[in-house]
Image (cartoon, rainbow, N blue to C red; front, side, top):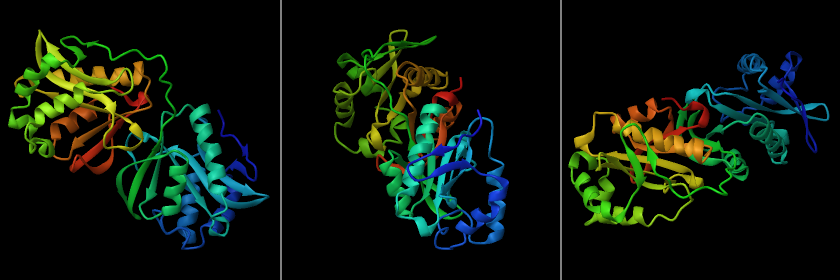
Length: 346
């Protein structure tokens, strides 16, 4: 489909054209307006170079760059494009309003139209935005539009925050937490009579070396088990035991995140060290990931992996998770990963 034109209450959002060069260069001429951009767009050479790049982003898939036209006057730019700053070519939205027209609601008016188009018409599984950490007006706008502030990111203009907009998920009629089966594993809901086996698995310091916050508490394993058994979240999610030939070899979960905003679904897995190296963690994680994305039809599944846990980072990458940023979670530095329905691999 070709890139469409939209009419809002006050604006015409139209595809950028070659004869728009002077108008685009003009709206970026104010240094104060472009201070949070990755390059100094008040420099006419930089603005012209960016214009040529944006002009080339128009494509037959309905994405590209739009100009915000107010009664014939170009006052801003909006775009949907595959990101060149985030992994996996995820779709990134960007916007810019000339300072002379800032603070009058034009950005919100344009973005509501573009975001609705992206979710409802293009069927995008997620829309991402990179916003400079100190760009408070854009951060407030993103929050008002439903974006979740997810992770840190660093770019040439300075520290940024990664924001993501996920489409709503219909949860009515979902079944209770199921038992999942793979070639070698039965992945069933965790039970009280698993307590002894879970204690044994987590008694190994090698397994718990990335859980420094928890292991400092007396009786922490039983508290962790109690918390998992008491889960009372969305149907279809929960905590599982990984069972191979009637032996509990690990545990995992898919539940609303305790660390990330918006109750996004977070996956986790732990495999006893005696059972590692045979691909069982991969088997279990794929089953839970696919249950979340394809059975529950979640917009995304998230994972928080300790910065020093190289093995789990490699596994997340093999499973199609995108390393989208960093953050301090569970009192330690973690990488933030996300997998979308269209990025899963086996």
